[in-house]
Length: 167
Image 1 (tube, one colour):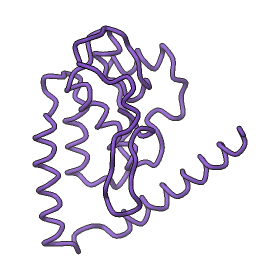
Image 2: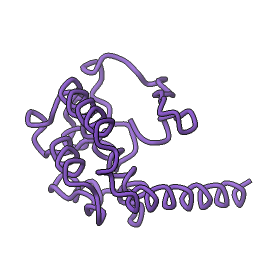
Image 3: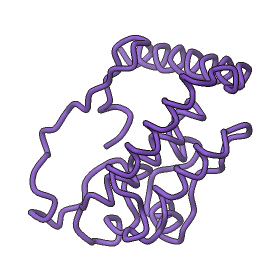
Image 4: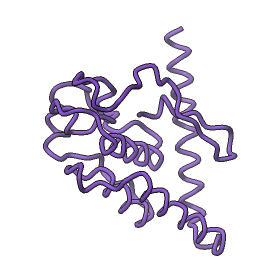
């Protein structure tokens, strides 16, 4: 699971996971595949994929949504990065990330897979956030939202210019 496999329908909030060509039972293969920054440390160490490893990937997506860039975008994706991730390194929390969001993200990227939340627990937490936001929309920091949108637009422009350069 990584951002290249998440499709979002405009600003309506609908999203889909795509490119499930390698999909199969989580205990079927011991092969390691994926994009290093989104791959759980235990998988990088040769353990099988699990629901908990998907939760780790979800945490990396959460981080990407706060930064507008891929986790560890500024360093080579090689054995050194694998060692750093397996040693507990995670991307630096982006300034002004809401504390509740930060805490959820940290729970999801916990080094111990058994301590990560389940998808059902994450759903309950996010559903609660949505319910509270609908009751108190003024509590969202508008500057934070504006900054996040600006970062994503800049990132999209950079991706488009890079794609055009490669063509």
